[in-house]
Length: 181
Image 1: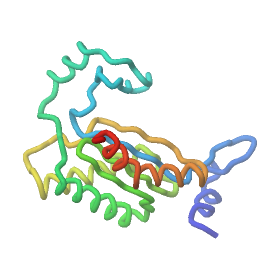
Image 2: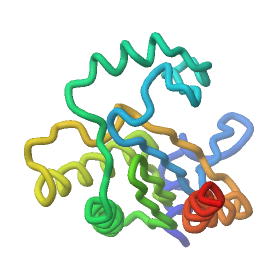
Image 3: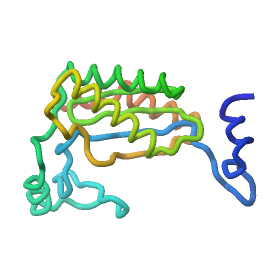
């Protein structure tokens, strides 16, 4: 029996059925922006916690910018490599499966399969360990590396998992190449 099946059997709240339609995701797709690179009011639109997608608001963006305690965090190649390595190390240590990861200059993506761990706890753990490693190896004086939260999407079927792995692994570079043309 798989660890996923064991977790469902040992925790009746996680079993599916007419009284409990919980469907454990195959993976979580996490996207986390670096600090200050996608502020409330952003010209691209932005996501307000518990209220969803919002239209650009230049005044709010300016106000948000004024409230920042540090400059926006832009990760160079060395820092991105550290994040990628730390994501793998943390997942390995926790017994999670890192399906795909891609750290960019202003955000990171991770697709992680876990058993019985809340998505927000996975996100918090990955951010915390990446922050520790970046402070240790890049800049011990920087306090803010990541946005306060980040996007979490539940991946519930194999086709979606394949698509999100491909997006994280390949599409980020394709978008950059297309914008350079």
